[in-house]
Length: 182
Image 1 (cartoon, rainbow, N blue to C red):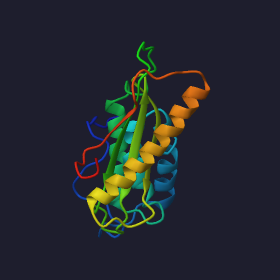
Image 2: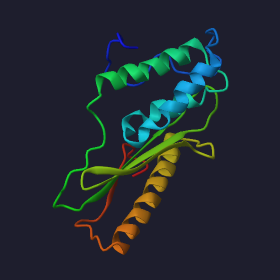
Image 3: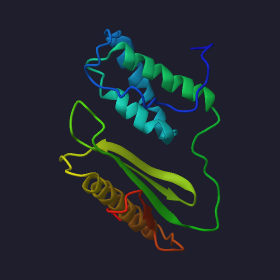
């Protein structure tokens, strides 16, 4: 990977990763080792959370396409080595959140994937990505569930901040991209 060319996105949108993709199997031990190592990186690099979560779903049966996608994450990291969480002081103690979901794009199962990011003083302090437990009948329903998770986390963080004596300046907000869910 030393001579690898850097890229701008951690995961390609084409082709969609799936369990049985018709490609020859990859070296399972090496794939598991790489994905296991990558799972620690999102602690300081939330921009690769989705890609690592997606690749971890194929640890039990990975193919050459999955291995190529894992190497793509490393190429992305090489090109964005200066990125990461930056904790900067701010006079505006504002708490906000961002929520999104991925509905109906996984051909292996029909569960949606929820994600959220909670930001305090322009610094990310909490994030999560996981499959939803129930099957959503529409993208609005899946988005609403993602919003519910983000709101629950935001309420817990706001309560924690108030217990620590930190007051927020404005009402906390959660942003999402689905008009029906909002």
